[in-house]
Image (cartoon, rainbow over the protein chains, first blue to last red):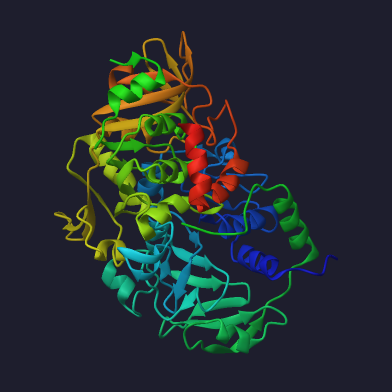
Length: 261
Length: 266
């Protein structure tokens, strides 16, 4: 593979990394969010503060962790605190700029399901891992970015179970529920980027990667996806971004295969 | 006051059929050896409490030790599903498993309430989620008496027994642990009894400024079990065996492969 060839997953990780800025504080889920956050720190955002729910604040792993509690996170952190403390003192008051979450299902209002698919709660078709830290990350971070591979099974009109609230049923719901953060600002996929429509809060396609067919994006979305008139064609990964990503992954115990809260 | 005993005796004395048992350790310091001893002793009808069930509860659930699971994230970190947990929920194998499900913030606060001797804890959480809507008996809305804000109350956890793994204890049974400290202190202080396995027992516990210390009078039993957290790890003693976590996926997926694994443990 030459430097200018890249996979859809690499484009997605690079696109997600670009959404993070230097000096931001970021609450990171494992899997794709962790890969993207570490890529940002290795490239344009060396001062990005990574916070994992295991209580590691300011972790600076040189390779991708497999779990949120790998030793590399503790020994490189600015501080290691207990699990009650990370949620109560650090997340809940709204100190953290961005929460970075994966999902099994996400719907047009950015609500996330990582609990059950099909059947009912007591007798599900598929039992997923559950909430983890995601509900409070989605509620209390100043903003949220969701990263998930796109299929019409994962992008649905309405999630089977609301594990973590995006915009609920639409405008006004976050305020009514007393959720302090602004909610999901971006959904980054392996095809492009969606952002909420300012009026309806429905996620709309606002950016695609070079060569993405818009009809294919709509086909892999379970709601009637609106496309922004000024659709952005997202810049492909630079040689520097790709090299940094591949370097991280070659040293990683890290997984691109799944994500969780 | 802590008694220093072999692991089998600690489990025999502390864990009884039907108990509510909290084996804690957030990715780090998971008490696997003690969990395997519970399987060997054939405990039944346990209510298993743990934020992240991890492989240790996948194994106990598959072995038929549990009646109920109280938890907040039941996956194989970085790998995928816990298939014994899924088989129990989706198909009732080997026995049906009742669930009491929370978020991490909710579970952590439930332990804090238990350790604090309070009936509940309060947090800004659960609003609008299916977890609250499912009508869990341990999540209730509550109005702040000062501001009028609606918050969530979560019921205290009061396990019969907490089981944790730590780096060191001294001969009096004072326990010291460090690194990712999770909710182990809260789990021990909220429980009626406790078992702590340790990497080593030393004459003198050198003070460490970043360590959690559980004084001997807060602990029931201490057992020396070197590498007792494997495939989890003890910072300063071992590394997380990420390959084992990846390999567990195939064992866990298949009932026959799991039963073979179980024979080896027994």
